[in-house]
Length: 294
Image 1 (cartoon, rainbow, N blue to C red):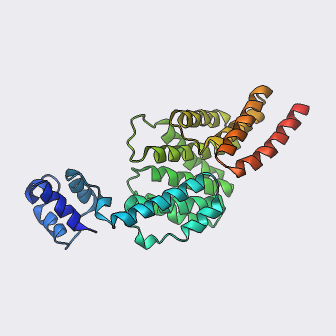
Image 2 (image 1 turned 180 degrees about the vertical axis):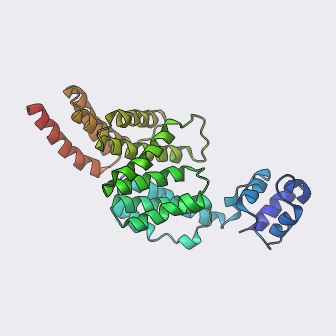
Image 3 (image 1 turned 90 degrees about the vertical axis):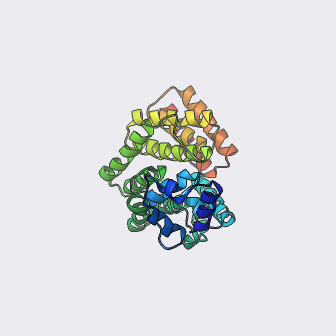
């Protein structure tokens, strides 16, 4: 931890130790921290940093290496969204966890590793360990979106193992979270925030569709489409449109409506170079043709 960054900022702002720690901690606690003898509790350190216009993450790592690592994790997350699971696995093996100091980056790594392992049906113990680190350690107060992503990944894992009671427990939590999202939600990276919300929306909508709860599934689909259109986020459009078409076929909606959804899905899949959706779409079209012939 670069305590010098903290000290330099305090002195640049001409704030005394007494004034800085007022109402947060004792001056002795602050003095021990600045002299590299003892790091205070995270809640105390966070409040001290806020008064200086810093974040706790600012005190960790060389900024250039931290930025490079964060860019890599963000790129891996985007690969996960377009279902390039082998690419995600390959790149995750090259990430040195020991070099990650920033709390958000630690949670992001645990989420990515747990999620891809859930999606490729790896051992439950490995999956739940990463999600437990988020829920019981890194975000133990459940204040960040990574808690919801950990709930989501746990739900996916249980659903893949046909443990539907446990899966429903987690997906219901995510559903309630999505319903209660406020328009004034605070986020550091607007685009990434909405991509994560869309991750929650898509997989939860997919689960409910599998349980034939089309009311919830379609509500989530509409919420996802509004975000995609309103925030100009296209990564999830192929998958959301595909799910909308699948639901419409199962509910025997108007054939013209279904045909339009199929065409939209193909168009967005090509734009986003999502070959997985294109393959699934071919099978769905065959199902639709059979239904029309009945």
